[in-house]
Image (cartoon, rainbow, N blue to C red; front, side):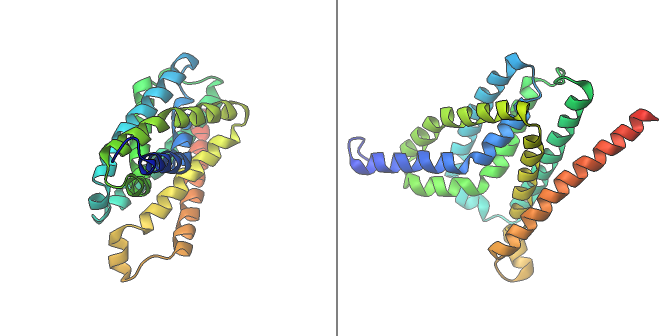
Length: 231
């Protein structure tokens, strides 16, 4: 595609806009993972986590159509996402108990969490980006690369809000649970079991159950931890 053509710039704009709109949940998990780090490492974790996630997303986009047709992939991804949501809520409790961020958590641990969550949550998002790229790898790389600072800005803003309003952390965990529930029931294997496509209503209900389950399990584990600490 010609760099000077209007079609090229229109497609590039579509990729950037699509990626930013679909990356709201990714910004949440990036901020959630980075908040447990010492302040001097938070910006580094957000930058490297975002950059690595974008590179991973480029690779994933190139094979997205083939990947998403494989049964059980989304089910595995949903379980991973559910686990990450619960773990992030438990880290919130650790911070409240200690009165400070747990410095033993390394930046590499945060980046790893960001990568796993972004990989799982991008399974559906990359299809829209791939469509906007119109089979052009150049457009894909440029569009996702330009999106990096926009995602970093969103993550940094959320991180500051989380420090002032801790309830956002719980809401972020619930969001991951919602995405996990929705992803679980839209796996091709589920369609095979049911003999029909899962409706949007059913997917939304599954997402709601997933969100409630993450928060409920997080609260239950907190109470057990408190009970064990007081005995």
